[in-house]
Picture 1 (tube, rainbow, N blue to C red):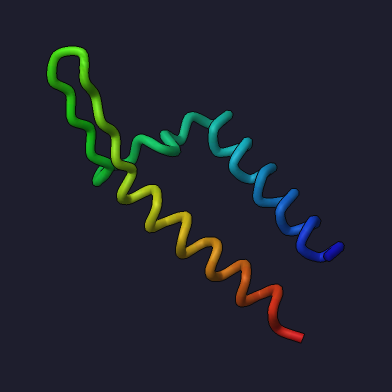
Picture 2 (picture 1 turned 180 degrees about the vertical axis):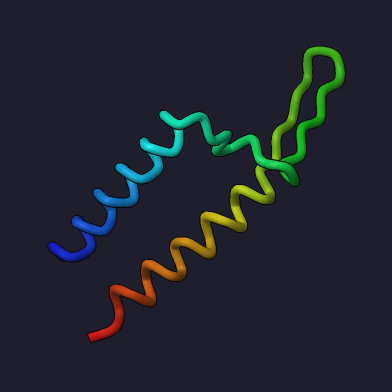
Amino acid sequence: MGRLLIVLGLFIVAVGVLVTLGVPIGRLPGDFTYRRGSFSFYFPLTTSILASILLTLVMMFLSRR
């Protein structure tokens, strides 16, 4: 449990650093936005794929013993 909290904390710090440096997390190429009148729909496809890959790597790292 302690290892998971440390990795989660480091991940949050890394995301904070990227946002501070101006990396457009959540608005990457491949994220779809549809606007028509007062309706807007946002589907973060690329962001979801990248998050899935990163979380898979973290879980693989944590599950090794």
